[in-house]
Length: 260
Ligand code: NAD
Image (cartoon, rainbow, N blue to C red; front, side, top):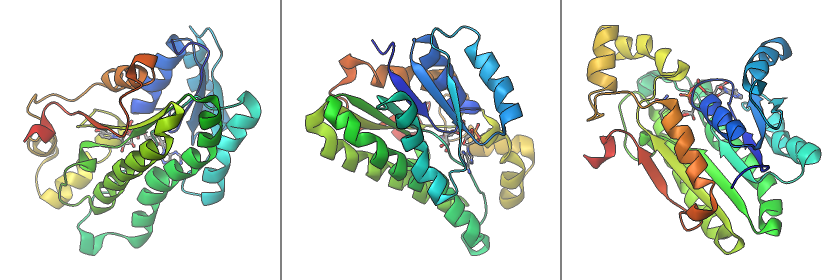
């Protein structure tokens, strides 16, 4: 099993990353929770996460919009805990605007936080994984890594790129017992989704309740949000030994969205 393995999860203080952290802590891993929170806010989150832990989770702060911090994060974890066995690149942000109004700085921020940071953490973590002849890289992409929606140019471009990065790493690592996969969720109710409802209402010129019904749940045939715990369970499965032949895959967990 995965018990005792070192796991780094980026953006793990809320939403999907938090659910993944909880699940791997429960499975007995040495979990490193990465976040943007200051020490006081992080302490509270970490004390909740630590409550039932066999191995106490550790917190690492880094602003992944900053290239130097992004490059440093995985190395700091390796210095402290040794090789990262399981790397989950989850941090991400969303910006909703028509492309002609899309702020160029925001374009760069979306790419830096999701795509560049994944490159930097993988680049730092993979030599030891290869040397150990075991490793798991899980990138949280999106249904928007496989399909587009209007007003999300930076996000859709980034998530498609994350899928491409994942496939490339899978090929490079395949002979070393290291897998790389992308998880592609549909809409999951998290702060990232909750905070975009108002922006979506503005660009689509509809009410907030219509955004939830007609924009978010319309493409999802189940008409239900995916739960963060469902993503966490899939990440745990991909980390198991029995999943060794699943690599380079973009795995949808989207209530049927991409079946259309
Ligand atoms: P969330 O906002 O709860 O989590 C995003 C995390 O990224 C947060 O912990 C945040 O602190 C971190 N983050 C943001 N900016 C950062 C920065 N500058 N430096 C470091 N960390 C930063 O949202 P979530 O929905 O849980 O998103 C997690 C991942 O799942 C994202 O990559 C997102 O694109 C992806 N995703 C979400 C959905 C959804 O519907 N919620 C669907 C598909 C994919």
